[in-house]
Length: 165
Length: 99
Image 1 (spheres, rainbow over the protein chains, first blue to last red):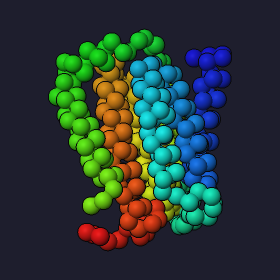
Image 2: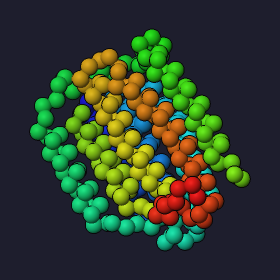
Image 3: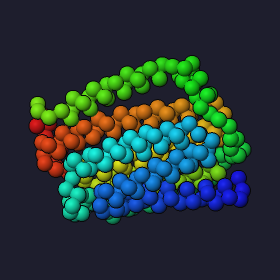
């Protein structure tokens, strides 16, 4: 991976990291949700660089198109967003900052001192057909369990959010 | 390549943890959980591509996305319900059972 692809990779990684940190730091919850949008889109870009084309599309459709819209709906329905102080109060900043730096330092130290298996070079080929085949053969049971789980979540969410008793 | 991607995922994980620790708003805490799920997904896909070529990690990432969607729907339904009962989205006030 050299030349323009390298630059695009670094740009996407930079956007992902910066907006991910902004989600943690922004005082207004709407701003944090918008930063989360850029994080999800950046992660989809990283998936493309790891030759996961189907997952990149799924990430955009489900996270950006579904979960983020759901989060924004919940923000609008449940927060007094007009006042910044009320919308997203923070606490434990110093212990959380220590945990952030400590765990990040430990993870990066471990990453640098590990010899990774494999060549590290990514072979780009379409994965959608292979994934569909695997879901219908080797991973058929988890696939069916996931469909039952989604039905249960659908019924449960409808029941929980219903007004009244 | 894999090391850079894993560093991005480590930063996302720590941001999610920081969000969960510091925020009081339930929806903001859910955002932190989504960040952590995304960082786990990045790791699954990175190792799926570098360690082997059998796409098992990508399949697992698909199921993580499915679980994240189900979890977000149920959690936000609970938050809306909690808001209508308690009048706030602050998790510190969610301390009653059978309220």
